[in-house]
Length: 286
Image (cartoon, rainbow, N blue to C red):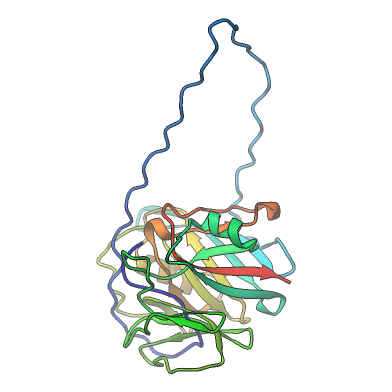
């Protein structure tokens, strides 16, 4: 969603911040399929091939291993009269490589980013402007783009391959040559296991995506499947979830930008972004 964000680093303390939500995502254009064409001199052939059986996803809150580094979880809940469905991945960073990719000249959907990079998992990054430039700080393989947010937002970062998630309001970014990968976005949703107070979401509902750290230090990457989530809904859900066990969580770009795509060979449930994004977080299992 073109608006205001990016991706980032180490966890911090604090419980009150007010940030506005990104604007609502544009409505995706419907796909129009052409009518089948039958040659007039050839009779149509009718077959009795049965339709393939599609196994519906199971939202049972159980973690399922996809690789040595990645587990997948499907969660459901109910809040404010709406059903809540969420896809989350748990990443053991000791068994994986986490990289940030950025290409403002050729933004892609999350599915196309996965196919271009060969990553096991892709999730969208933070906010960007009309020229596909990130609006916060982004670091990919030690190379920095954009400028850090001041007084709001958060940052996921890797130093020596180890992830951290920090609240920029209480721990502002300072130049650190040890940071290999980083993404900034906003707002922080959860700090020290508590929902951040005063999240300014204006009641707007949309698809959401997030990055978090759990109590064991694993990286959590997640996306909501429905459009009924406010930022406060998501923060409350993450802080309360016994399955996710979130310590710190940061909102990523929402609406049409939200997408989480797995390598199709791994199975699991993926959700593509409606619109192309210039920056993503990628996971490669070792």
